[in-house]
Length: 443
Image 1 (cartoon, one colour):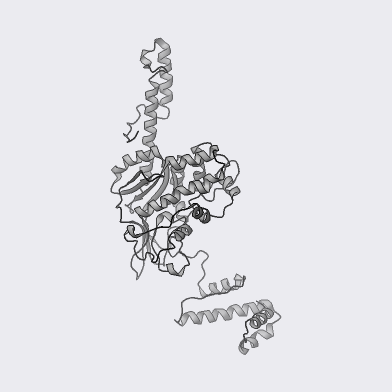
Image 2 (cartoon, one colour; image 1 turned 180 degrees about the vertical axis):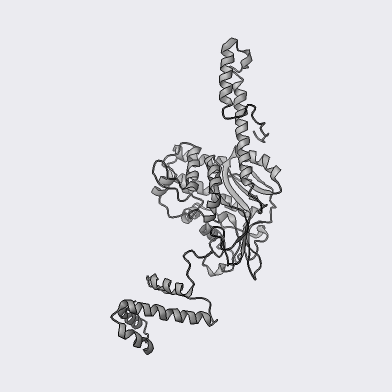
């Protein structure tokens, strides 16, 4: 700010500039840079005196769209950080009524604006602990809510990211894979910077498990939320850190994804061998298929921090009742945000409709946070069992001719050659004796 600007602002505000300041500024009034430097040094000393007085612990700057001076003052005071430390793992709202809120379900971690909107009618907000989940209510999910709360990405941008034409499920898998790996779309060349369940870009901690997530998405386990485990990491950790310096962060590994109904039923069968280490919740679009080993009223703490001079902070939970409210929103985003891009009755629209009605929403928690996460093992076993079942089905079909007769009943060399060729095809990429499939309900 130069000398003339100083006079103009003082006049607009009806202020009298102290004579002590004018005596310093007037001799250098023709040197704007010198006036700005004096202003910064003078303001810095004022701020320092205010902070050291103990009367207040905060400052409010009016930048007038010129942030350079304010940044310089903050740097001189030692208050500036290019990447400020997060107060909590999720982004708090500026609403004064939620000032003391410090606990939220993990499901909305990538959609904080939606969570704030759906809980706006609450009279009190969780502080210290989530409590009995039966007391929580959430605003209804309407088409208006989904439309209003979605990000400002244009239809053209979404088509470039998610595909102008979908032919099958694998096209959807590729979008999720591209999102995790930062891979451009093959046709449009556009990078997938977001998907419907993420209002913002990927969190820094996601990069710690990006390769595992990419592998699952490539194979059709469509992840929409996750966090790695942490055991006493410093609160200043570049990816996992939050809260005041000098603290320690703990996390249970968490994974949330959409998966086909067939795979969901396999998961339901094999998951019991991982109990009680792993908690799970599996639910479909209508909610009439709902399986969990969680307590129906008590939440699971999945993130907590230990800080000097404070009680343990527990900001993120997995709550079974809140998950059912989140389920409606998660499925609604398929239709409102992605499916609506395409004409009704088009192949692309039918692909998205298929995902909605034939994929289950799953969350998994690995309670053993000091150890490497076992959730990747769980998901890989689910996929391996499915592969084994498909191979056994092909082997069984390969032993029959098109008329339903056993190959052994075919005469001569023709039958043996056909059997050998089909058996070789069925056993491709498998061991000589494929593993025994796990019996799955409903199969």
